[in-house]
Structures are given as structure tokens and as C-alpha cells.
Length: 390
Image 1 (cartoon, rainbow, N blue to C red):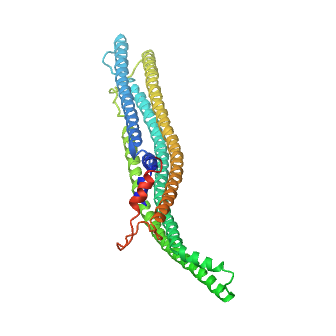
Image 2 (cartoon, rainbow, N blue to C red; image 1 turned 30 degrees about the vertical axis):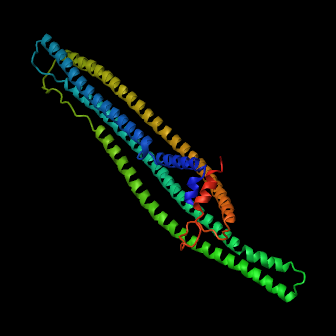
Image 3 (cartoon, rainbow, N blue to C red; image 1 turned 120 degrees about the vertical axis):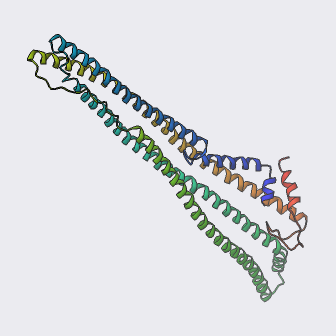
């Protein structure tokens, strides 16, 4: 049968559908499998790299600003002290700039922590979606394998029933002819009917026995496929979880707390009220300027982070939509495949029946190794099948 299916004019179309199903099945398994998944993982890594670089850049800018504003405030305090005749008396307030910088840096760290938690939730949702898609893809592929075997066995059962009917056709015709003889007495008529019934039961019993064997084989196949599917799913889920942990670890490294920059030493001195007020005013001026500048830097980081998060969400939103579309297309292709396969098998059975009748063969078996005494109908049937669409 498999040789004749490959010789059928529609086999090319059937094979192309099978190739499409295989290709789509690989793509539906998610980012870890196939070209689409590879591209998605690559883009994930690029987005994470940009976020890490933005984090590091923000920390560096804050540290530089801290040093710059400390230097400027120190210079202003030195000038104020010099004008008051207290040069070299120290810089009692400049260190507050360092404290302000630490507060701003802590704000960045807190935002990094919140961003990391949001990213973890996104990764977790993505991993769960990938697991579900992977399980579904494996299940569908194994179901197709099981259904193909079931179709094959059902086709063989039909061929076997046809071969029995063809083999018994002469005897059945003879018995029915005898029944049509009006001169046949009741006892003889009853005997002929019993022979016909026995013939029908014999055929039915043989087909039933073959069906029982086939069902047992299918049950064993289903058990094997379930075990195979569980192994594949376990391996796939482990891989997805490992990749998720790697991404989370990389994000955690990028969200480390910024290092502190120590402020200048503080010298405790007694200052006149007017000079102390002047220094406090200078301190507040530089602290406010630093706070505004640092906040602008942090806001720029937040904007960059939000843009990256939006790109990430759009990227995975497109992937989820594509997965749904792939599953729909897979179902459509599988339905088309099954209908075409059955059409080919039915047509082959009709052609084989014609060839068998022409050669006077009463019993036709499919894919059975004989004892060498039979007639191989494969080649003559193949020629008839190849000429179907000429």
C-alpha cells in the first residue's frame, strides 16, 4: 500500500502537506525550537543587554554628578570661608551632597528592584505559555502518529474483508443460485441457508479477530506514545525553565545596587550665625541643583526602561499571536491531509480490485509476505494508478 500511495499522482500534494505540518510543528514549540524561537531568544538577549547598559550608564552618571557637585560646593564653601577670614577651616556641609547622592542612587536601586520583579513575572508568564504550547505540540504530533497507524490498520481490515468476500464470492453465488431453484425442498433449502450463514459468520469472525488484534496493537502503541510524550515534555519543560532562570540571573546581575562615592571629610568648627546661614544657603542651593539634575537622569532611565519593556511586551505579544495562528493553521492542514490520504487510499483500493479481477485473483492481501506461490499485483496496480490523471 505504501508503495502505491507514493506512486499516486496526488502523493506530491500529500507529501507537501506533511512537510508543512512538520515545519509548523517545530515553530509552534516556542522560542527554544526552530528559527522563529531562535530569533526571539536573540531579541530577548538584545533587550536585556540594552537594559543592563542603561542601568550601568545611569549609575555612572549619578556618581559623576555626585563628584562634580561636591567639588563645586567645596569650592563655593572655600570661597565663602576665605571671604570671612576663615580659610582652611573645613567643609562642614559639603558631605550632605554625598548623602543626597546616596538617596538618589537608592532610588535607582529601588526602581531596579521593582523592574526586576516585573521582569520576573513576565518571564514566568512567558515560560508557562511556552510549556503549554510545547505540551500541546507534542500531544498533537503523537496523536497524528497514532491516528496514522489507526487509519492504516482500518484500511487493512477493509482490504481483508474485501479479500474474504472476493474469495468466497463463487461459493456464495453458487449457494444463492441454488436457493433460487423453486424445485428445492425445504430441508435442502434450509441446509443451503445454513451454509450461507456459516460462510458469513466465518468471514465476520476472521474480520473480528483481526480487529481485536489491531485494537491490542493500538493500545500498546498508545501506551508507548504516552511514555515517549512524557519524556519529551519533561525534557522540554526542563529546558524552558533553565533558560528562564538564566535570563533571570542575567537581569539580577544588571540590577545590582550602585556603588557609593564617599563624600569629603567633615571638620567640626564654631561659625558665626551669619556665616553659618551663608554656608547653609550654599549647601541648599547645590543640594537642590544636584537633586534636580539627578532626578532628570533617573527620569531618563525610567523612560528608557519603559521603552524597552514596551518593546519586550510587543515582541512576545506578536509571538503569542503567531502561536495561536500556527495552531489554527496546523489543525487546518491536518484535516486537509487526512481527507486527501483517505481519498488516495480509496482510489488505490478500487484500482487494485480491477487489476485483481482482470488477472483472476480472488484473494488480495496488502503488505503481507507470502510463500512465493501468489501473484504480486503491486507493479500492474502501480501502472494503473500512475495513469489515473493522464
